[in-house]
Image (cartoon, rainbow, N blue to C red; front, side, top):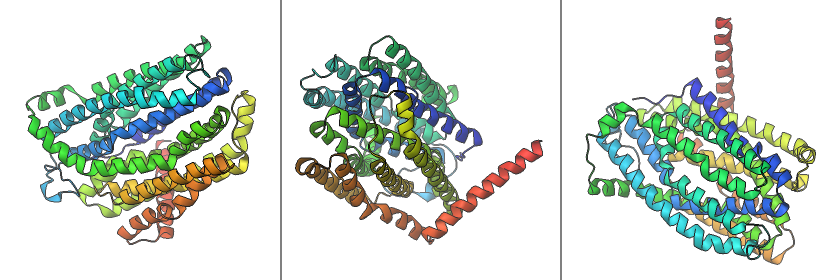
Length: 476
């Protein structure tokens, strides 16, 4: 079974990404207008803590997704590292698939309970400190408890995304996301207008994802698939053996995610202890909007990941390079456009909606957007390397994360640079190694210069646009 990316996959992915962004941006004006500055700051702190405990996933999601792609591409043997080309026969091994599904369910069930326990203990202490003993925001403990439950269920069912993406059901996974986010937006608007404050946002975040989980199950577990995998009674030893194979690279990715958290999120965590909630709200708003631009810009690359894994299996190296360069060209174009719009129109937009939180000064915003651009670029190249089941950047991610965490702490403790100090630390550390290292490694693999890679991406984009225009003319 070959995994291909259709036009519907692409359109639904962008449409889904819009709704993922919309769940934050469409509701953002209402949040900024109806919530107090303290509530806005607490919201960003909760999201930061939530992203920290999600590190307990420890790389399982991409590992399961990629290995499921291998199975649906005909692999009969899952290796700890690399790809076993000799066991590929083009047919799905349903016993391996059934074992993969059972193992994923077991892993995420246990992870979810560990995460919930962590959030209700260590997480509660952090929120207690940040809210001056749960006093600076009304119902802050209840808000935190509801948010903790939403993270628990999000992790408990997160293996569904791996199943859909791994099988190449891109459009279906995006549909589930769209319907879930649509419900979230409607429920958030309703609860905010009813005067529930930040508690309403937390409740919507808890309830809405169940829509997506239900649809994901229906899309993946077709009647035919359930019949085929029901033939196999997977023993505990089989699950354990597969877990050990998945864990080999998963633990590496987990360490990378830990380093990535320190690089991108730890500064916000520290800001909650050193800066006022008003400053936290400003910093968090900048991070949210910059991350939104990065997420939209990387959408095509994300869509193509199962396709990249399949092309690795099929040894179509030239096509792999062309499709990767095209996805990165789209990343560059969309990020630059989004950044220009945010720098010049963002402050105006916030003023128009009467926001209680402001963006940092324009020079700080521009500097941060450049840092996130380089971050996203090398992250996409690093993720592309992972599609061949190789993770060479564990040590560098941990070192970079450690340096950024330590220097961010020193900046807040010893200087008055505040937000500026945090972003300068992140930018200089990444520029020293990761920003150039992983693009360089991919270019070496394909024996191509970075300039030639950029030109190839531009040419691929031009050819695809030309092809689409020709199809449109023929229809007319």
